[in-house]
Length: 406
Image (cartoon, rainbow, N blue to C red; front, top):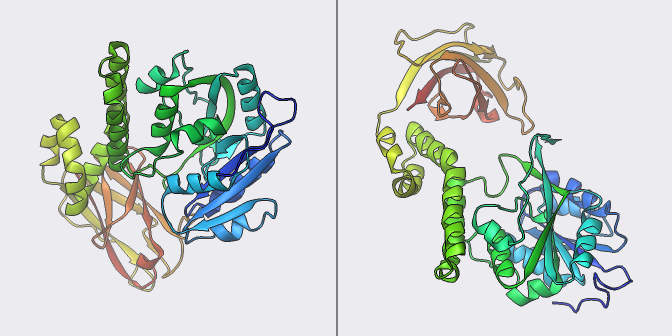
């Protein structure tokens, strides 16, 4: 690592703060992340983007900003990318901003002020806003933390957004930066390792915005729960003979399992519905270990609805409905037909959205298009929306549409 500059949060000279932005295939959001870092009210910030082997427009976006340092590496994971950025940085303090999140303009200034007022603290955590479809959710609010932050984190009071934390360089160097093991949740592991040794503080100013979207890292709940439980297990030796911490550790483990319960069970049900055996086998051990009461439902044979025909291109117009009408019924398609290659209800990635009016659908129902499962969104028991990839509506034909569910 480079030697830090002579400034520190306690001196009169403004300290240099390094904002490290690792990016793997999040180029569509990277410009917002960079510009939020450039907009900081603190005068001395250096910004480093680490391209972790992206195959999208990440390099092109990063190079638009001459004042931003740019590093490329082969895909090695976010921990390696953050450590690489830290090694190249000269800052006295650090903020690690994920490429799909944003900082608010006062983030660095507020964090430094908290560190100045708490000279023994080695990192300060602020509050986070939640972005859904690019808009702030006004109802979202993280709970406050108590004075024992390590215990609070054990009990499930997680830090949602890495960008909401500002670190002193010494704290990161003391613990050796981020652990690159793919079996761990790298940010939570770092918080634990630092908070176990040194004093950390929190404040109630919202300093960063966490973007919720389907392509975000950690959205794969089966992987996430394994990593988080492994990170908790790593704390076991430390808390085993400290009853006040052991109780918090046990409670936090249960919170993690409950937070991911719905997504893990959905993953299991959906993989069962679409007949993806490898995907089902991957999640089944988690269900058996942590949610055994759900096993019986997973063993049921999936139900299949009647079918309607979706007409693509110059195939004869109209839609025909099968006579087999069970408890799961498709009533109507919107649209029922489309010219070949035409995007209907266009989506940002060039796909098209097909709406189904139905009876008896549940949150785990999957729409099939000529036998291929589609990404399906639940709008209630009478409405499903399915995303149709462009390759499925290029050629003229009649496509059979049906629903499968447990």
